[in-house]
Length: 276
Image (cartoon, rainbow, N blue to C red; front, side, top):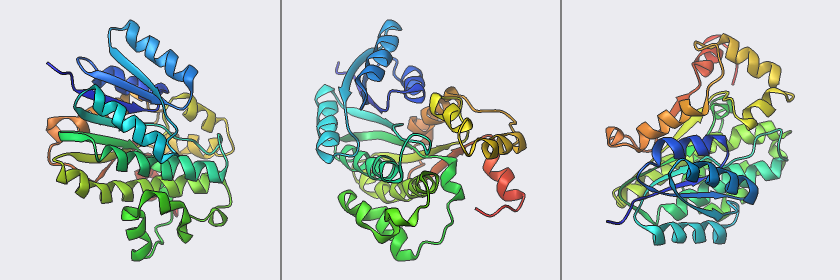
């Protein structure tokens, strides 16, 4: 019997935890731009008994993402996609953040929307940062972010580099736009009998999360954590649990929406009356 395929784009800590939680009994295709990260993740999962195939991918290239989708399809029915790849503000410039976190998500959503099997589901990892982006888009701008061809996204005036004074602002915008993109994709995925949603993590104890805590916005992030209901950092497992639910039959009636997994941080900040 042909194994179903789980595709995890991004082989860092969060991607590995997702693969470990969900990948038992499946063919796991791990993809990342960094060969050393990919090899280490594949070795860890392989040692634990998972069936793992790897592929290098550049999510900012349609050709590269399309090749990944076709590779996944050649392995068996693609029933689960989880996109965890991204750049945080301390890691990259405004153009790089927009390319990876905005364009990259759109390309992955589009290309896997053409190979996802009936009954399948996808999850895009966004961020709670998107909830703090000023929601000042016009209806036309929001519509363009939802449905414009992915290759044209970075040419939109609302996505122009000059709009963002730093990478943090670009990151917040990109993650806000991810939720709109998922809304738009839910219809085309639905035509294939599949679902797509996003998860917005809060401050998670991954290498990326810890780097942000040590960066310029670290004090603000720690204050958000301290003021949240959970009063603690999240773990990659917290995100993997949420992803597992959204990919499961239990979430069969959920598509085109976002699940905020932040320990109550956004609610605390907005409830205290701070502007987005």
